[in-house]
Image (cartoon, rainbow, N blue to C red):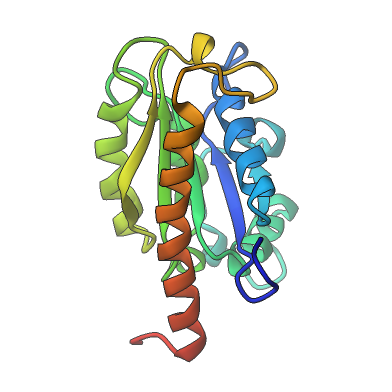
Length: 197
């Protein structure tokens, strides 16, 4: 179990606002797993936030005048140790709600790792979107860890409450989270010591 020094704050960014979205299952899976490992996951749901299409980034608003939901996210992101990205695959690409959610911020992501949990209704598990997402996350200053966690046929792989049903999923998820924790702990340590600029 993590100590106060090793406990991580991890926003879980859900990338879909569709009416019948399956990604909420994946978000619950990762939220539950992070909680069981003693961390503090925080679900960031664009459906609940109802962010407008990007007009001004958070930093472009005069100090104290950003919309309340952006201020709330900025406060969360500043204390985050890493980001868990839950992404579907729309036409081989990143869901627009996820791109919109990500693009409202920049400096708040710096020097923190990300990890990609991707999914699809079909057999590829969202990996084609994940390849594009890697480029975006690196540009935002939160490069993704080497491993992905793809979930094919998500409706059959995870229950609505986030319980894994696919054989071997819990074991694979443990390895994925262990890798993410390693990167998050390393960068947390170095942020305290100071960043290059």
